[in-house]
Image (cartoon, rainbow, N blue to C red; front, side):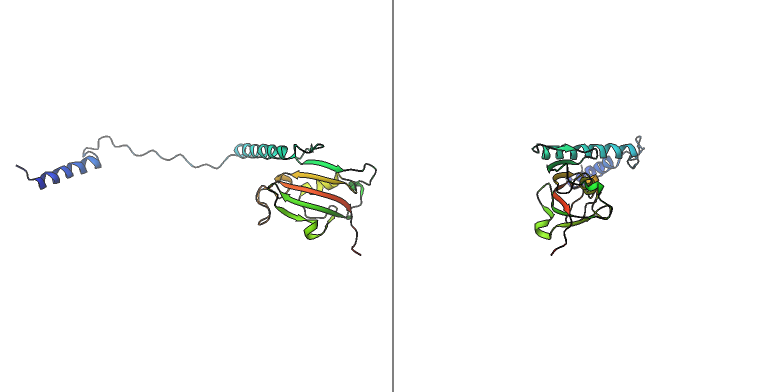
Length: 187
């Protein structure tokens, strides 16, 4: 007759054998190899960016839907001319190096102001020489002196995937309101 202590010990030993597998191998199979890690393909990245651009364009369309004269450029900028004088000199016809004065407000879609002429004074903008992103050059190049415009510039034409930390986050849509005039030296 076994004692209680011995029967508990025997049960524990049998449980241990059951947990560790059978002594004869019992058809042990190794775990399958994890799937190989692969980098995204060029097609994957293109599809991802197309989807992201479609999402941003939808957001910009919703944001600008209340603008009665809104139009969309071929590069994805949504804009509305608030004042436009067809008889005023075109910015595109001005000589390279001409300095313009922008009474402006650049902000994010959450209304955080990046810069404005009320805070920092008018922005001096030298044609084809200013380091503002391409979207700003596109809008200003399509304007005439004295024009006022509001626009939404997608990240691809603004500060892109990286943004401009800390003020401009990654992939930020930039809201622009500005009046374009020839630069006037302060008196």
